Length: 297
Image 1: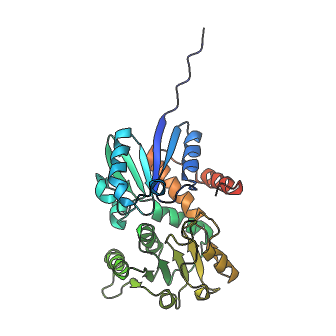
Image 2: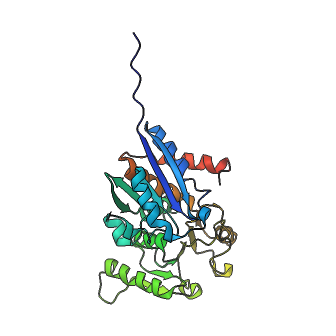
């Protein structure tokens, strides 16, 4: 008698919406971890650059994702804030941060989540467990920066200075963060600036959360002479993994954290939201390292 055929593994359709994402390792990480759990995942890159589009394309893309039955989407630059009005609901974390990097589709209802902050904190604690948090400077008040600001304050940062070229955006971020995280009247933990040199005076650490340093926007986000040996530097860019900022920081004796740690951390969180299953952090981290080693970046 013929043995009954084994049940086909569950298949999920996932995607990533953003600009300049052709070298993203998110598809490979999600597909491999799913395979280890007996799931089949097809992960589609939806790169706005391929059609010379911007955030104006989001309504059409989100509508198409509903129609096509995507189980979930990752969202990256420049869409993390623009996608919010197009969703049915927000998880508390995403609502507080004002940014979404993960969308889950449950029976046609799209809910926005944010795994950036938790992913950054996961990688940061592993790389620099004893880093000083007395005075931290954050470059960038966009979607990723907003999430990381919440994360670093939850880790215990005494003072956070947000630096952004858009002064009003930095001030708005500081106001909302102080409302959530400052408990003593008049003792504001968060301030805003447009000048990195002023912000870095006396700082213990620097977090870079802008697109500068990526393949599509190469360069340094601040003058190299502002980096000091007593300053730790955390990067969120991971393609390339070795950015100009990290090279300069290491040459000046700074302890550093590359953007790969956040990429792994946020991928773990997104996988668990998409599937309801627990990812194996060590396995995902090893897989990411193999992808880097074989030159997928």
